[in-house]
Length: 147
Image 1 (spheres, one colour):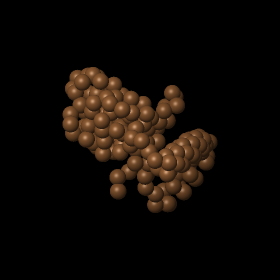
Image 2 (cartoon, helix red, strand yellow; image 1 turned 180 degrees about the vertical axis):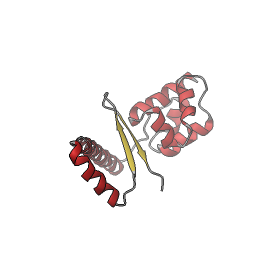
Image 3 (cartoon, one colour; image 1 turned 90 degrees about the vertical axis):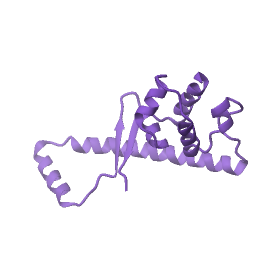
Image 4 (spheres, helix red, strand yellow; image 1 turned 60 degrees about the horizontal axis):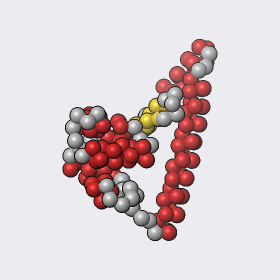
């Protein structure tokens, strides 16, 4: 079953998600993925099913048996759509990182301006919908507010 662990690790790398975000994405407790990656526990059928449900482009034969390619074969139209979606996501990611950097710059105001900003924010009814953590190694985690 060490092969299954290496394939799960490959999916983590391919998806560019950290273990915690990956666990959230597939709908399992973060400790479950942590224990699998540390080889404390083996991946259960439920975990494999949740990976396949979330990442429909992953080949079940590859994940379970190591046979064939990781990604299912796409016809020309689906390949074009997938490429377009990836480019859109990369553009959104770059835009979000830029906006995050800009927000960080706005927070670093002189003390005299901070009061005015606090009053303005308090007067608007705002809710946090997403938190993005940027790490020094260039990776990030994103947390969405549940509806």
